[in-house]
Length: 103
Picture 1 (tube, one colour):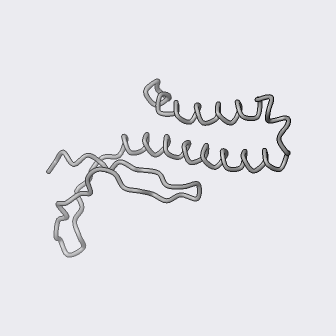
Picture 2 (tube, helix red, strand yellow):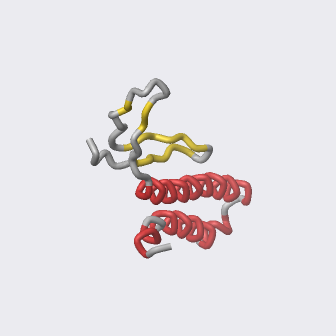
Picture 3 (cartoon, helix red, strand yellow):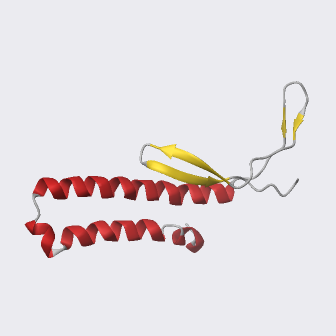
């Protein structure tokens, strides 16, 4: 992984650090274990969503626009621009659409 890609996981590392800080805090020991378990579950889902977001950002940067022609021979000349929302089992992430530089 290049350093540029590693930067894309900064938010993921911060999410993990937040979980670690919560569990390591003195008040965590005084909190009911089932409450801490639910918090870890919730924070863990957010961490997994952030991991997928970081990964999707990398993938989006590598995607290239390709020319598409229908079976009937009609060329598709429009491409989605900007971002699209993708619902994952961990929550909503954003995927950048491939470059539209050939338009």
